[in-house]
Length: 118
Image: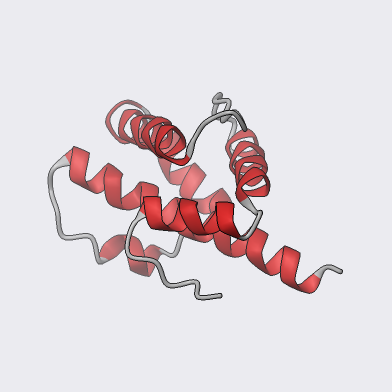
């Protein structure tokens, strides 16, 4: 299984195929709770709905609660180096790329756990 995805929807579809989608949602909920950010990602969401909700939340955090946004990136362990590579200055585009980085890191966590915990 490759861990190199080109976009959020591709990653979410792969998580469904690997039967890791629910674990990915659990990991998102856990990390958002650890960052003290109220959000509930339901397992009922389809991949597109999950991506949309996450994107909206990241966009809101960037614009309205920047300190909480930075804390979330720290809790999730999104690499500062990859965040600095974002060249866009539009908040919508930045939040889209950050959403992808968050999903990518969370997927890595659940994939490694499932692969090495058995």
